[in-house]
Image 1: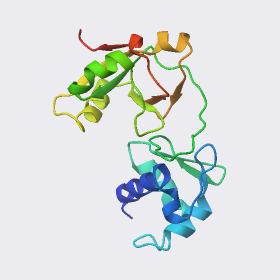
Image 2 (image 1 turned 180 degrees about the horizontal axis):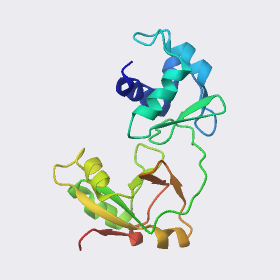
Image 3 (image 1 turned 180 degrees about the vertical axis):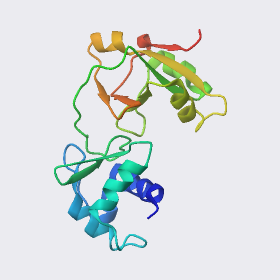
Image 4 (image 1 turned 90 degrees about the horizontal axis):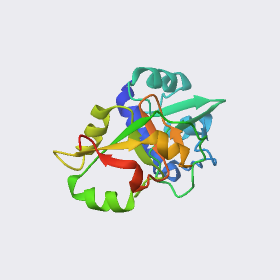
Length: 181
């Protein structure tokens, strides 16, 4: 089984279009595994999909995009569905990073970081990951350093996506600086 392809397809379905398979996410973004498998099995090449394939996919893909618990599965982050995914607040590392287009610098330094088409702002504990994300919009992206500890102390909510990715509802400009400046 092509776990990379399965991971990408599940990410799309669980983050953006659960309705495309007749699925409904609960308030925390979970869907029953048996419902997902039944719906996926109606599509090629997933006719033989089993729960064990989902477990193997999660173990095989280095970038953790999904999680399983209590007979359910969800995408960890990246949702654009209109329903708000409820997450548990968690104290972030002292510093987080965000890569973005250079042309957005003025807007970000005035208005802060906003989720735009997603539910959350995506941040990283690693500069390399942040820069890779930024390269999706700009060949030479801007690396932003987020004073996450100070933001947390001021009441900004953070949520852990996975070992590398952190999420926030919004990061006010006062907690952002261009890295290296």
